[in-house]
Amino acid sequence: MDFLMAIGQYEFLQKALFTSVVVGLICGVIGSFIILRGMSLMGDAISHAVLPGVALSYAFGINFFVGAVLTGVLTAVGIGYVSQNSRIKNDTAIGILFTSAFAIGIIMVTMLQSSTDLYHILFGNVLAVRSSDMWVTVGIGVIVIVTVYAFFKELLLTSFDPIIAAAYGLRNNLIHYLLMTLLTMVTVASLQTVGIVLVVAMLITPAATAYLLTDRLSIMIFLAGGFGMLSSVIGLYFSFTYNLASGATIVVVATVLFFLAFLFSRKHGVVWKSIRARQKRFELLN
Image 1 (tube, rainbow, N blue to C red):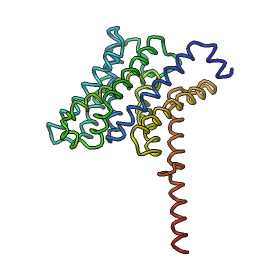
Image 2 (cartoon, one colour):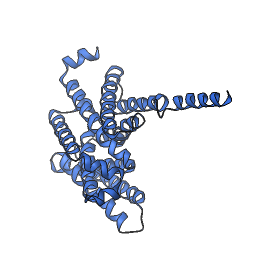
Image 3 (spheres, rainbow, N blue to C red):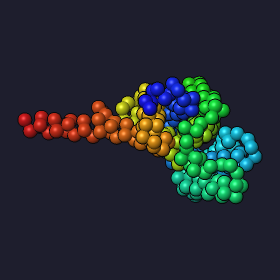
Image 4 (cartoon, rainbow, N blue to C red):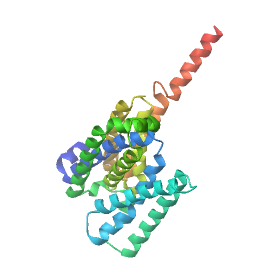
């Protein structure tokens, strides 16, 4: 059946498309700051650290959003505390805490024997999204966009130069934990679409693609959100048409867009760099 006809006919596909587009947008927006701050590993850590909270939420019959956000924020605070109060560096603290949290989450899922489907948590299943999940995702999307708009200058300054930000009286730690909270919320919103294992790809890849195309943060955010939404739509099309895993297909599409930018970006693409280098050599020889 044609994809467009199926969208008009099936409610589950409408929910899947709407949810995945919102997830693509907010992953691109938050991913832009994660890229600029060199915190790609933190995105991976938070995405894995929410698993214990998800397992506990299912076990106690509450919305998984509550437990996931709590464990995600606690892990971010724990990573900061360990790295600031020991000889352990930030990347080492991330490696220790996120793998520990992930392992505890897997044990909880197996021990509690709840109705939690570990495969869907790890890899997502956007075609099974419920109305409540869709509206939670929309709510998170609104909170993320409004917060980024309200604190854009603070996020911009602390991302590029924390020392000058401190000189202007900004509290870098508060902005850092605000960003970690938003990152955790976006991660939770992405669980249904791409799952814990692949969410970091949606956080990083569209933002990295945009980073190759512009040097301005505001344009980068718009491009990253656009690439995230485009990846979601194209990925869902291929997933539905060829019966492929939806989350993995969305991530593959995002990766293809990245390599197109890597090759053909006007300023940073390897193809144009090669052409400019040849032109320069030709000018020097003549």
